[in-house]
Image: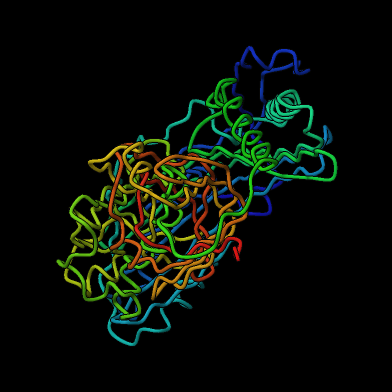
Length: 513
């Protein structure tokens, strides 16, 4: 059965799924836990649009008709939904279906790329001819059949998000709002943001691999505003994962709400610290944003291949103290940044970037790996079928060190702890950064003495990495809904870090006379 895109969008096939409503939501006005709708098959491209191996082979042959060193077809079908609840009222609700195929051919240093949302054979062949226009050689022998690789199991779901209705999600938002208001009488405004996605991809490569992946995603964010007299403060928290509906338990949601409320209420007591150069403790978890932005991007191979990264000639050299090990690992089950396969059809796994202080590897896609004479690290990622892949991070973190959090705090005579972050800017090549710290703590004489807020920290990623003098044994990935932007493409990521001590950093606080 072949269905054109327009026909598909208006078509609803018979199918059903059953969701058991968690007990803590039973009082939220839900009457039905049965969702009726169109069940998405494991491979909608073949089932709905007739893109079988023969059709794929014909498109691949056209794509490589003028020559190719590498080529791939990236099919994507994505359903996304969002809800916003503000002061008890649904202020926004949207659903979107996106589908299409991106066609890439690589010849030497050149890449030809085209895409189409029309998955009919004529449209795909026309796109293939457009992408292949960069080549001017002889046709290569494209595969006439493909070797289907097994689907991964890092983030399986019993009921896909495409089969979960608004009537199931809305009680979760109401529960979060009511829980936040009940935690403190000073809370005057609560906003809850929900997003979920059900994505299916299929990648066919010139060397005959055929990869399929089902990628679920969900995220919920709560933003609270509190007032005491004329003083108004805001705070937030969110949780995200490649999970399913039942992951949003009462315990997990309550912990998220408490974190948001605590972050907000502590600001009534907080102040800005003195400005200047001082030791800075990066709290475990969310401080991984610095590791990701100021250091991780510099270890992506495309920046090093172009010579724009400070790490471009540092493989095998010392970049940190011996107790520092940095890893990018896509194979962590259900993490927001997890991937069974990257967007080039390569198995995603674990790449040790820095081991015992020595730079060991970059993150490679197929193009950079070939130029370095290495195997890809499974790091080729793209925002959608409309974009060509590039080296990207997935779940990036620093491993445990030999110290404890208490030892690190005791080692600081005068400094700060950075705990939550909002805005930041990074110059990727050099690694210069500025981050805005929303919540933190003042440390004096080896003890935490007062909460702080509204702090800028300024530094250089590679230099800060060298200045890490202590690493605790409390490494954790942050569960927030992090999204990484690079060259106009956004992809979901995870990041984390143990408590670490950076011996010196510029802190933009108050100037004390």
